[in-house]
Length: 308
Length: 279
Image 1 (spheres, chains in turn yellow, orange):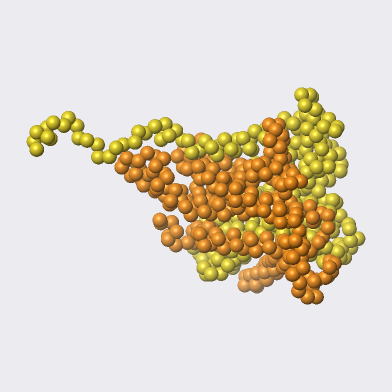
Image 2: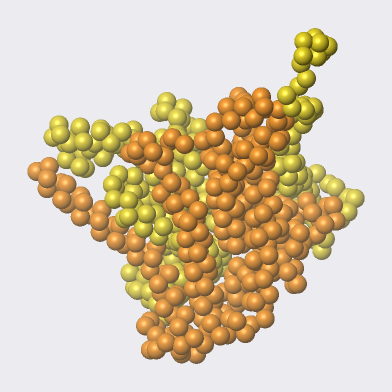
């Protein structure tokens, strides 16, 4: 036995070790999805940006192949008053709807964040999620049906004191459709920031004599303001990008930017024009989501913490 | 005085919320009730009886059935590919640090920031430039892209709860990193992947704004068919289709609840017990 031990120079390895190759050192998992996003999102967006500076050729949807004339005339579309009104509709109606939705989402999310009963909470969240995942098309149809000529539309017309097909009535229906769409999203997103607030603070404030209103307005809301503001911005961005809602409920009278892009694609076959409008829509959405969010963070000094 | 403010304030907020609830839930109930309307024309609410004629009409219409198949096929394919790529993305992210990680994280989240109309239009332009055109493959790519951020977020959330020492222990016993991930991390992240898959399927079934740019006469998704029908006529067949999609959504939520529990998806933040934070 001593001879056998002494005959070995090194102990044999316990298990055969697989060699550690580059697959171990290089972060390869991140590569396929990265390629997918770059190829399907970044590159096509770059192509659209290039196309937006191309002079449109009537009859040729994407312009004549091989012929590229640089021009910024596609972006001049908003100097036309009709298009300014579409832009105004997009921004203003979305703002109204987002404000209403956020005002509704705050108390509901507040309840969801603090309610102790597991059963109730589960049912409420489940109901919100069913509404959320029922297709947007379903919701738009419901609103269109409910506010059709045999539904609530005559009531709205009477309320505003105008004719049945007036733009004001249509705008109201679009806002209703947007609110219908935005409330579930806003509520579920707002639960996050509201949950971060220490529950003891509310109890402490009330034990010091504040009523519930004062507690909410002076203690809770300022603390979760960055998160709530961030949710507001994201909701606003969702509203601005709405497509189906203004398409069906707007009845051609109210058009959002996304509808204009679609019209350039399907009706007019003006791809450079559609590209310019796409870039504008993207710029507006990114400004709202990232730019204003950055402003909120820097002005309050607090970092919003919600799950995107 | 303070109590009076509270009472009035609470009453106002409650009234406002009732109005909002009516706006959010009302149209659903309206269209679901009208979907069993026996009248052949669109009359005022409520329907005088109950009839399944619109559901029969839906299932008899070949366009709708074909669109249903296309939507299901797209949802499964896009959902599976999105889950695979999203899991890889989350795994890759977990190995990165610092500003590089934030940049890549932002890149994977970016499809959520771009309006779907812009995504659809740019894929159309991009695919046309390389000769791929519209149709099923283009639609699958778009649906996968749009679903990806949801999968990444779900899987990343699951990966957070997996201790890195498990992988290190496996590697110290002789496994390569890939083996360790495949044998240890992925089974533990199963829940996150399942949640991601369900989200991806739901997103794909609902997607319409980007799909309108990429459908062909032969390949159309169900939401796109419904939207074009809505513009053309206000047939109650659409109400029947809508009711069925609500049912589908309920199934999705039920599946999510079975897999992970709806409460866990939101967590309880500062209000919860420690149970969810320990693994």
